[in-house]
Image 1 (cartoon, rainbow, N blue to C red):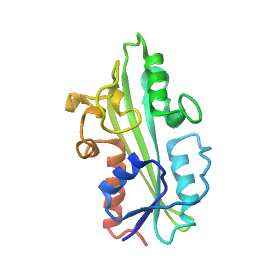
Image 2: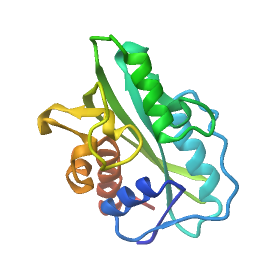
Image 3: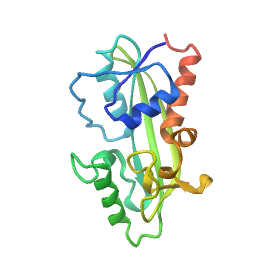
Length: 189
């Protein structure tokens, strides 16, 4: 079954295709405003918005980093933590600045994937992974906050592990694999 996805992020598209080989990004549609106050609200909003333009099931995700010491910030603002058009580096630099001298470095990545078909929500899937914020970036793998996210079971940061290894335990991997399992169970009408 062909699945459509709503993303312009090449890192996310790479991970989407690890979960399901036949994923086609929807292009040429004006961006959906992310006005929700939760990952769930934003993922659903995007899936419903983009699904009316797809000729089959479409999924969209909303994901981000929650840091305990920052009251779960940057949260839904992860991509624009340092400003509306911030780069990954700017977001990482701001996070390191805010975490300077902080001893509680617990954090988690969160992802919600919403699956829709022609404007009708089918299901949402949530994935989380716990870790800690490093004191400086490590590695050149991944994207976003990966170079700052230490995953204790690997004894490495997500920026130091291959995408395939990270995918098996990551927030996005968990949510996407739950969606694929749902689709394989023939629950999609």
